[in-house]
Length: 106
Image (cartoon, rainbow, N blue to C red):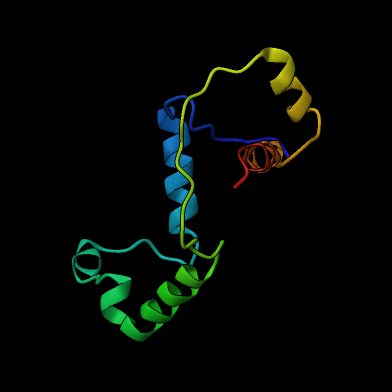
């Protein structure tokens, strides 16, 4: 489907008039008046319980917090060593970490 109105360029006066006419002709979704816009309230103010449940759901998602987080460091390694670990796929940094722990006797 071709895009009739592009946000990458300014609208012509004719395009703006056509858009305004389409807005005015939609009885199910009339344009808000200035008074209606002024009376709008934030979602959290209107539905505090629902907002709190959404917040708790979002906080629950994702990876659980670690007791001991890893520390980011910068280290210089030989390119062939890095290539070897990267060739093993996703998680190569964790595998390198595990191998360093074994080598250090930890």
